[in-house]
Image (cartoon, rainbow, N blue to C red; front, side):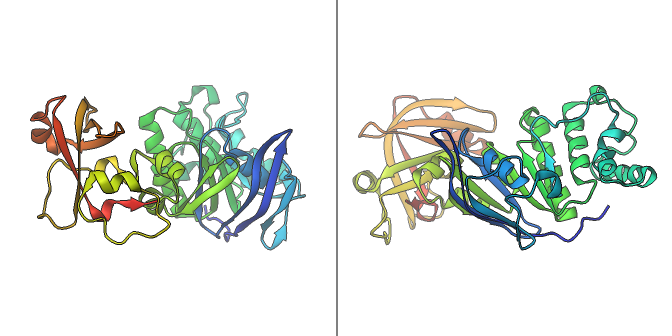
Length: 348
């Protein structure tokens, strides 16, 4: 199957209130044609509300939503022609797989033979060829998710909206499906807006990530920039393990040259995996902090080191398994030095 030409979606100053609760607060976002944008945030941050507004299931109190050059904010959901995959999949349990996938084509008046041909092609795309006669109750969670995907793409939508489609799957299957969804997007190039609360999922699957908090987009950037160069402490802590030291304290506790510091900088951030137990490549460009080793936790592919600084602040370092000799020589209660390259330190 081939996707039709992709179109961009432009959200302008959208707000939505539920009583006294501000679910969306003046949100603006452009998803370029063929782009995959993940909306990431904690529960109640507004990400699903924004997706439902784009889908047409809720109407914003203020703002506009443009698709194909037209404001669609008042256009009913069934006239927008967007493919939607829900968290619950919303499959019809009394129908077989083929009937579920042909359903969007049937309501559009597509002849039955053509509908079945297109549904079979969509099932092939999601690696469920030959499953048309199966009942929904006979399928695994991953297979049901694929059926929901096939139903969403069978009518070749220009926009695909996905609301936490992998949240019900176990970790291994969820990670497998992340790659399959990414491959599907690369093949079809459908403009995609994807909601998730899983940080690793957002970084894995998207071209850009919109981090949401309290009804607003607080950062919109590439996955690497979101992780390495967060705009504030909320994004830094939400997106991954991070040690954040107020700059005034850091100057007294960190040995080494921080280099040029912008006047607006208030804190420094180091990702847990960027701490090292020894320096590699000489003394140049390294910063060092000392503290009391409070705990060592083995986590399979790494060790988590919990270290208390002199001022009482706790920091976390993650040592990969190839540092087993260094970790094995440590004892809880001893003073340790943690080193980090200066180019791995981000100023907030």
